[in-house]
Length: 82
Image (tube, rainbow, N blue to C red; front, side, top):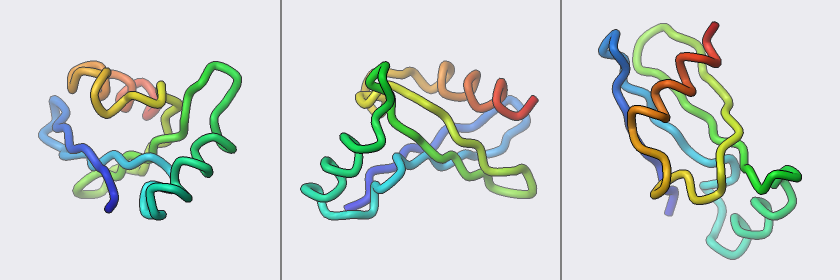
């Protein structure tokens, strides 16, 4: 099962964020995450907007689903758009 998270920014755009390889089986996703983890232990997360804005890629800690508050996630998305 793919784990995703939705957040809404100040412009009322809803962003759906998914860790890269999140659609693989748990075992394969864990292995892929290990292979794509950077030296800081971060993983790639892709956030896709509702509407016309462009998809954003973020490097986040691998526990981003639980550890990063919605506001921080929105701030990182906004920063990547500029």
